[in-house]
Image (cartoon, rainbow, N blue to C red):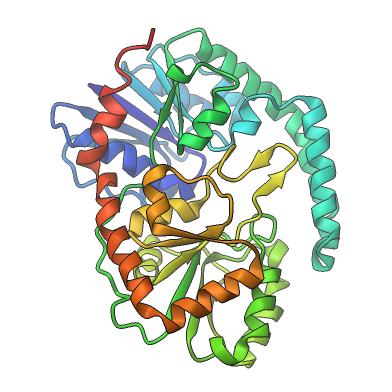
Length: 397
């Protein structure tokens, strides 16, 4: 097969590009072409010989670059992300079958004006609950206004690809169930955001329980306030026994968290954090040192967006990537095979109990880590090829 992959919007989605390219590349007769930008290209690793890259030139507009990709003929053209250049994507006409990855189902299906108004009100309610973020009160309204034009382009793009041969890719069975309310199930492929990468396990000799939270440190998506509170309440236990790694950068809107982080550090708790984007090498190195991957998630992100249903979290992707167990809020929908390597917490007091139990019962975390390392091998390229390339060759009746 001839495969095209376009990623020009999100550097953070480079692992999804690698997952697609390397899975197709396990069959040497496949020919894979990646269309991307220099900023994203330097993050990609593609050792397979049947993968090549077409780079956008500095003096080339995005519209011209996407138009140039239409001159190629593919058996499948993957569009990995559309979070920018909406007009350019909506205006480009490809003849190849489109395989479009949707990261936020609520933005592409059922995002009516009334739904967007409800989301705006939800965003304001969330903002005013955090005193330090009140200065950003104008931001949701600005985004709401900008999204009128973006939504028109989203609708046009979906309408355009829907008249031809197309598939939609999502990251979990739960997302597939949600999307099945809008399109037929045989149009949907479930494929992971990243591959399992055999990393050297650097957690074997940890003196402390290393708890890793991968992803942007955003109070909109995760509940750091409640987490920091329970850590402080049991600081006598955690200060010598636990290391918290905030494995992502802190955006300007959440700089206020540094004061709380430093307060916990002053109390003796070891915390790693960053204000700048973390390189892929450093990210993998720190991820390999983790004992457990924590998802301190706010399940409801907006009025019509919910983790595990309309979008997936990087926590799940990094559980797969590193082969480490996870700790998630009760009720978070997991695909069946991942349930055996994840534990749930009912609330943040219960989370504190779970962490304390892991500290004093190291054999339990050791068993979880051993199970995880074995289970995630199914997410290696050779084991994923059939799921991606063969099961959806023919339409279901």
